Length: 167
Image 1 (cartoon, rainbow, N blue to C red):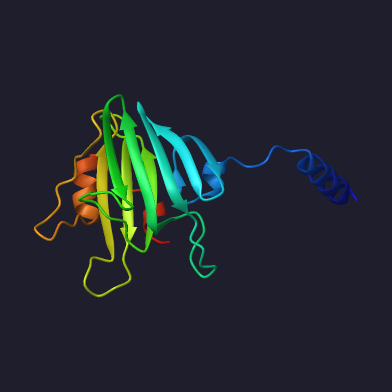
Image 2: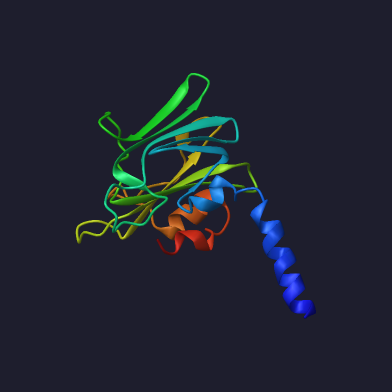
C-alpha cells in the first residue's frame, strides 16, 4: 500500500514539474542558453553566440535534434564570425546529419561539430573543433580536409563525450 501511495505522490508531483531543459531534448545540440523555435536554434558557447538554421530534418526517418545538410550554423564573437554550411562560401560544409556541442575543456569552452556522412566517399564522422573566443577552427584537418576522433581529441585536449559515438 505504501508503494502505491508513493507512486501516486510521485506522479502527482511530476504533473506540475517544469518541462525538461531544451538542451536535453535536442540531443544533437548542446549549447548554453539554448532556445529552439521551429527549425532554428540560438545559444552561446563561452563568449560566442551561435545561430542554427535547419534544425531537425523534414524527413521523418532522420534522427531528431540534429542539423540537416541543408542547414547553416553561424558562430559570432564581436566582429569575428564563422559560417558553416548553407549557401555561403564556407570551407566547412554540413554532412547528412550534424551535431554541435559546447564542451568544457582545460583551456576553456570549445564547440565541436560532428558531421555524419552516409556515403562511401567521405569519412563516417568528420569533426571540427572551434575556439569560440577567436571564432576559429583549431582542429587540424588531414589532406582530405577531414578530422577523425583522435584529431578532435587532440584539439580539445580531452576525450570526446559518448554522445558523439552514435546518432
